[in-house]
Image 1 (spheres, rainbow, N blue to C red):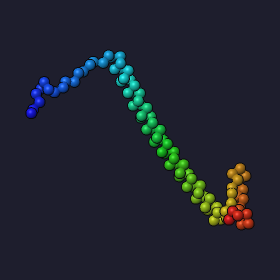
Image 2: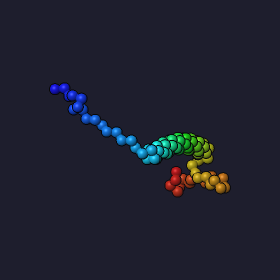
Image 3: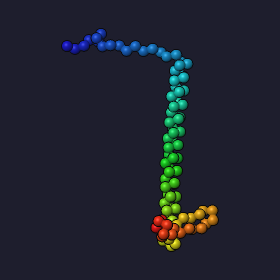
Image 4: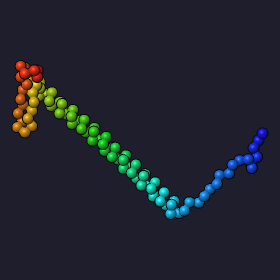
Length: 92
């Protein structure tokens, strides 16, 4: 059996007070701005982590070259001295 027009429920609409509506709009705009800011921060974070990784690879490359040339050891960054690991102390 087909429904007649009077059987279809009607949705009521209410006009919201302009002050409340403006408050809601302002809050939504602030939320939107914060989402954009968070996105920008995430992009900066990604770039910073990528650069950190690149610098780590550069350091690793230098350390490998030093080890090939002089042997395994530790570098004192204050004095510039490379202290070689001795084979008898278990660090070989």
